[in-house]
Image 1 (cartoon, chains in turn purple, blue):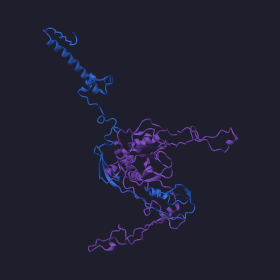
Image 2: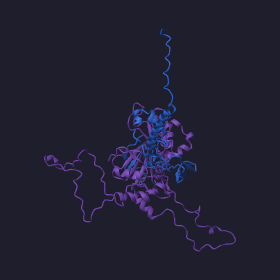
Image 3: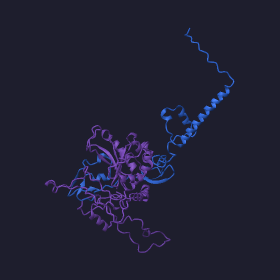
Image 4: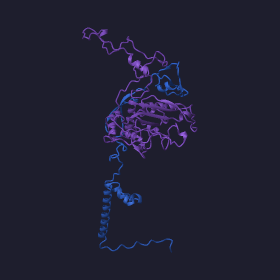
Length: 326
Length: 172
């Protein structure tokens, strides 16, 4: 929603049209500059920063009627669009510290000097050829890498233009009692997650069956998720690191083995820890105390390996402990 | 998100973008289907955003910063944060849980009554080691003084008579 969020480049034609014909007509240019007037202020001497109610104002169509309809809604980034979300309005502290300190430090730390004229030795192809021991190997798709079929992300050397940064933060909460009991659990979890994240949450149905909790796939709405981008994300991260995590009792840090080995790190918070967020603490009595959810927080970074992601996140103030994997 | 897509369209696209938390409003299926000619119109819902306030956070060392939050309190004062937590300040001796044993009394007690595991424990740091040594010296000096006093007070006296034998009432 915010401008930092990568948007699918959906319709080039409409955006081109919208760029060519801006829906807001240009501000009227006054022929004569305003003279200081002793008598009274007339209509045509009002400051032009005000908008005139009688002026033509474009209103986006309420419905999207398909790509072939002549009346197209403006792109999402246009202020007259119904889907427009204004912002960002502030520069969060965590973002400022990233830009001023963390990013240059990481770039310096990860610098690998190569003398001029150095060429790295050629690597073996990631997908292996078949040895032509059988005639059936002809035109067969290439073999996967050794030791599993997973192709890891390619880690390029970190330069000024690919310094790892935090792309988004996902707060996910699985409420198991929502299926067995009533939907109050889900409402409370949604409001709690909304309070700590400044974002409306989405709900999700269960994909798997959990017989002990009475959860049936596709029937029961059991989970709540908020995705944070840009400004909200940095506000949440700063609040989490500076205020909430130090207050958790006997918290050792994020486990070093956490992560999906492509730069995304997840950790969980207990319900007692979620209750320590200042937004929940300020009106703690409004929440049913047993229904405050725990949550999983995933930090999606643009790093290609967990090691780089851990470097970034520990520079942002997130401690890690235990055995470091990847 | 996918308001302007021409071909691919999910049934849940509108609702997921507007993010309602009411389970009854959610569409039933989330299958992706290809709609080559979409005759229906989809409602462009205005995104809902919770109201946010600007809050000033005061950390425990007095530093402040502002952030946007849903909490209406204008100022938040934290008592425990990164500035006074051991995990973020591992080298700070002020925050570490060190035994304050300047007079060496705890060490002396442990030397006298301690079991093997804490009497024989290696000294935690130089301070307590010194204290322990001082306590041991003081103890030795005290014992010496006591024995000298005993000598002085017992000079010129006869040896104390042996304690009278107790009568055993059951022995005849």
